[in-house]
Image 1 (tube, rainbow, N blue to C red):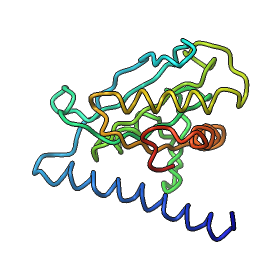
Image 2: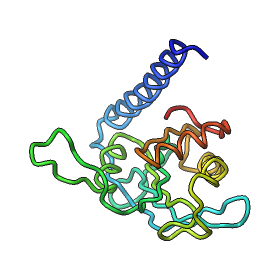
Image 3: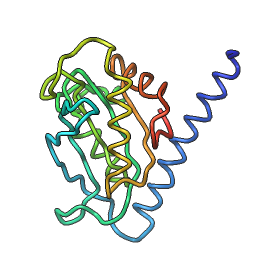
Image 4: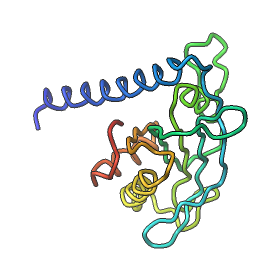
Length: 183
């Protein structure tokens, strides 16, 4: 693959995620209703093909304390750093106030996304043994397969993450999992 091809592909993927975001923002706000609230379903156990269960937090669009009806696209991060640990920073703020994953999720959920944070195998509350890089492709594939089967999922998945969480995206992307639309 030539470098120009890679740049074009990255550009198209970025446009894809941007298009998903804009379409959902219009859907979330265009119906004359206020933006969604974020409802959290914490410590959901998602079973992998070998029976290991991975700890998963699911932030869903809600209104009045109840999950909003309908199907939504999903943004997922798989991380060895703790799915509910503060690790984001708002680099545009002068004080560099740390952002929690819940704050990040709330932003996307308000615009009509389901946001999922999942502990990697053997890390924090997930079962199994953590061996760096070994299970990320298959576990990511299984997580995507689980997501597209959920009644709240519209079958479109975007992934996010930095550092090792970026590796988890590439590893699952190599296996062409169901629903993956943007990284």
